[in-house]
Length: 507
Image 1 (cartoon, one colour):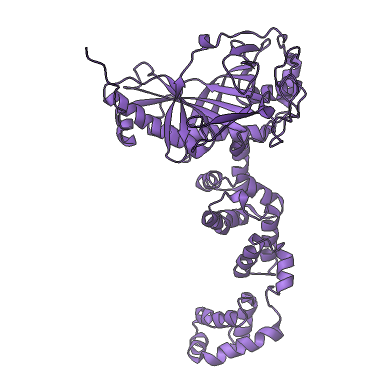
Image 2 (image 1 turned 90 degrees about the horizontal axis):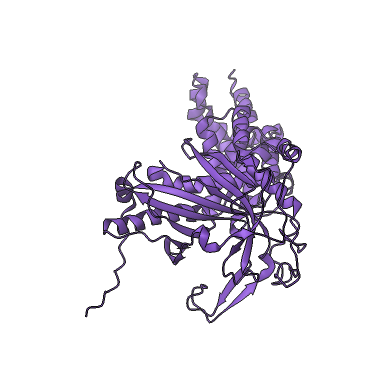
């Protein structure tokens, strides 16, 4: 009697080949931790990086006799998010118990929302790098609590496989979350990775604008579960999807989608079937690996949470929240584009560099939009690339950049000196004005200082002098250069030109 052999893993297909033969469909679930003072259902503090298992109460631990109480501010934040995503806000909704084995939730269930979310049926427009707009339909945004954090010890990778034991920190258990679930996102073609990353970036920017979360992805404030499926063509039924869990950087989201498209195409090309499962992304390899079979809703045995009454946000409260919403990122970009008179290309360049907030703050501090763009997209962008950091990680503030430009505008320094000063600011040596005064870097415009250098340049360049006196006034630059060199680049070039012309009797 023969024994069936396990099927060998199939090799991923080249991404471009996969896109040419299959139509990808995305679905993205974004979890955002809300920045409330306390947790979703109890008074434990909602803080980051506290000593393990100190930000807890009996309710955080699900101890017998403890009862949950809904955090009103968390509900307000959820409504703010729903309104910003053009959702309808439920007149009545409720919490449910999601039954599952959670080692990091001692209750062994998660308090979430199932069939009655706080917000539903919305949309958000996502702008890609070239300006194309993709509308992403939102199915729902619901409230729930976060789980604790497992640390797997004793293995080589920090994952559960190969670990000798695990530790659990319950500080995060009960932190309020809003989960935003998209409808299937079709018609992305070869831009699926870019669309996925741009969508999550759009949400991150909205969360920050609403001031409902710090939205720091490196801290896990924003995490994405990325669903990918392939079908033969846009008219075919949706394919079986994979769900890569807890991806927490834009680059990783892009790489996840790219790899899953290639992986699934390889399976389908070989005549296999994609398994509906959760997967894990590996930053070091850019690949995903299998987690567990994906559960459907009925597997979680949802039922209404008996310890919490249904929520019924009044229409007056909802409209009050709507009226308090700030300017959202897309509207802000359109406004600034007009105010700054940038071209569409210039504005996209700023946005793609993550420099919009920095430019706006620099303009608010007194610089012109064009000069702010010159510094942040020029010298500072180059420095950020060299240091392999984001622009906002540089040791310079918008106020310092505006101060530097103000010194240039006042003719106290020139552009060359300004770059020297900026280097010192980036080294942490202080503000521009203090550096200039301390090191004597101000532009020299004193005639008594400049005259000697001008006379020396005239004496050493008789051929240039003859050209100038013969009518070729543009040759004066050949005399300005030596003067600038003699004054270490600090001479006022305009005044130097005037002195040369005076000396040579040229009008």
